[in-house]
Image 1 (tube, rainbow, N blue to C red):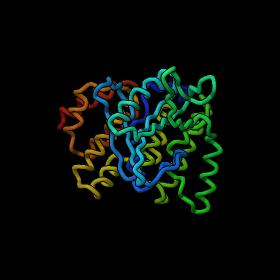
Image 2 (cartoon, helix red, strand yellow; image 1 turned 120 degrees about the horizontal axis):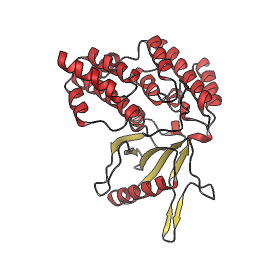
Image 3 (cartoon, rainbow, N blue to C red; image 1 turned 60 degrees about the vertical axis):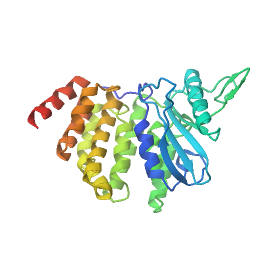
Image 4 (spheres, rainbow, N blue to C red; image 1 turned 30 degrees about the vertical axis):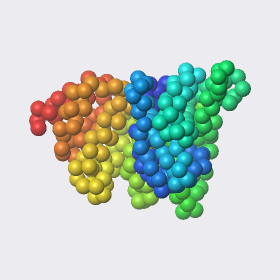
Length: 307
C-alpha cells in the first residue's frame, strides 16, 4: 500500500488544536506564528443559529490583554470555506461586542484569491481573517532547526513538532517520510523524558493518513509507550481517576472520528460504559489497525459482550 499524500483529508484536527490550547494556557500563540498576550482562557463557541458541520473547530482563546481569538483549522482552504467562516465570525462578533479576531490554521492547497491576500470582498465589506498558511513553511528545514535546538538543550519548539507534518506542499512519499521523521524524533525525546505522551499521541493521530497503516502500527509497537493507560494515569494524577478515564475515552473517539468521520451514536454510548484502561488501550490499537469502521465495531461488540 502506498502512503497517502496527506492532501485529501475529510476531517480537520479539532481535537489536536484543543489539546494544544490546553497546553498553551499561560503561554502565547507564538507556536503558530501569532504574537498574542499570555493565554488566560480557552473555551468553545457554537452559534446556535448556524448548522454546524461535523468536525468544525470552535476554539476561543482570551489572552491577558483581553483580546479574543477564534481559531479555525481547515485543510485545503477554499473560497467557500472563507464564506462559511465569515458567517461564524459575525455571529461571534455580535455576541462578544466585536472584540473578536479570526485565526485560520490552513494547510494543503490554500485559497489566496487573485491578489494573494486570502480574503473575500463584497460591495458591503471585506472578511480578512489572519490565515496561518502552513503550506508556505518548509517542513524538513523546520525539523532540522528543531533538531539543532534540541542538541543545544533548547526545548522551546517541541510543541511545533505536532504541526510540522502539515508544513509544505509535498505529497506521496515525501510527505510520508517527513511525518515518519517527526514521529521518530518524538519517540527519542519521550524516552529521554523531554516530551509528554500527550504531544506524541497528538502527532500520531495527525499523521495517520500520511503514513501507511502497517508502517504506522509498526512505529506504534516500537514506541510501546503511546498508551491510553499512560494518558489516563497522567490525567488521573492531576484530576482523579475518573477524569483520567474520560481523557482516555475522548482520545479513542478522536482517533475514530479522524479515521472514519461521523460516528453512530451507539458507538459513543458503548465507549462511555468502558471503565477499564487496558480495554480502552486495546480498542485504541484496534482503531489504528481497522481498515473500516465495521471492523472496529465487531471488536467493540465483543468487548461489550465480555464485560
